[in-house]
Length: 158
Image (cartoon, rainbow, N blue to C red; front, side, top):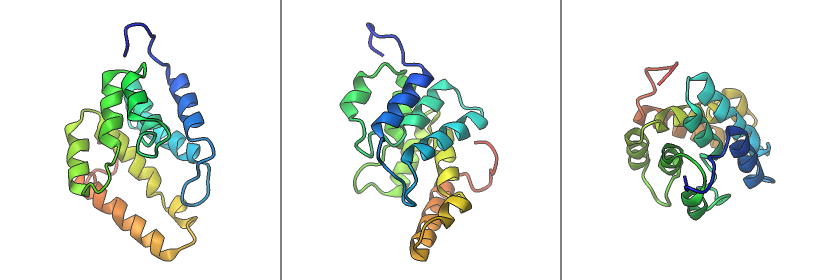
């Protein structure tokens, strides 16, 4: 955080994330903010703290280009929230194992990614996709990431 600005509240982070993703939709055509809200709720339900909930709202913002790395660097957020957002931001051409290693090495990031994967792989959400090949590809992709993060044997908390 900068010394001159008060930290953003969770309500302000939510509002900012919703505005940043305004007009974006997920693969099924649903408003992208529904995914952000589900991930934030999943983090809360898993016992996550405010830093992790804020990161949940922002977890795709830099990756999707909704907010810049410069914005994140200057934002009135805790260093931990920023670290989690950076850990969850996939880099072009990055191998899944390298991504998972970064998530595992960043305190608080694994729980946020667990909530993200839980929503992404929700059978009801996957069923909304028209293309069977896409449903299969995404289901396998999310299962591989759960395995890389050591989440397969822990259906509850991480």
